[in-house]
Image 1 (cartoon, rainbow, N blue to C red):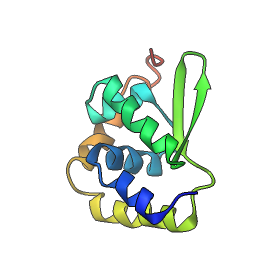
Image 2 (cartoon, rainbow, N blue to C red):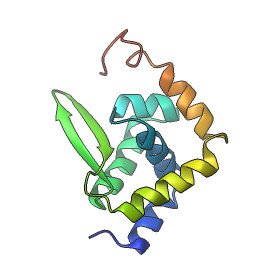
Image 3 (cartoon, helix red, strand yellow):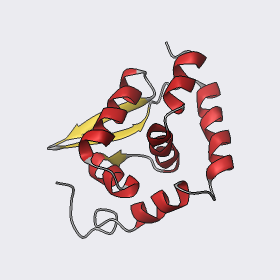
Image 4 (tube, rainbow, N blue to C red):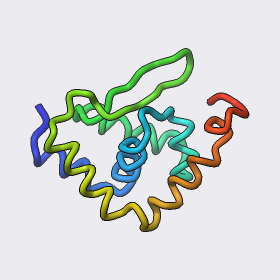
Length: 116
């Protein structure tokens, strides 16, 4: 069960918060999209995704070689509302604007190639 303390500790890390802000806007993202959007190496992104998954904040889905992440469908309303409120505060601020821009420019997003 997700507690407020566990949740706020997960949100306190900038990389995890950036991941959650992107996933709040997108239904689902693969690891390669997140590495491109955040301009970070895959092991670092995967480590943060594992923390969020272990806390019950994210759910993953494997499709072949790729793993896709989304907000957990059983995330409590208070947790979703917290993310939405945080999004209002950072929607037009760095690094969140740049993350969204890089995500929109990925080859995967534009259908030019798949992850891998």
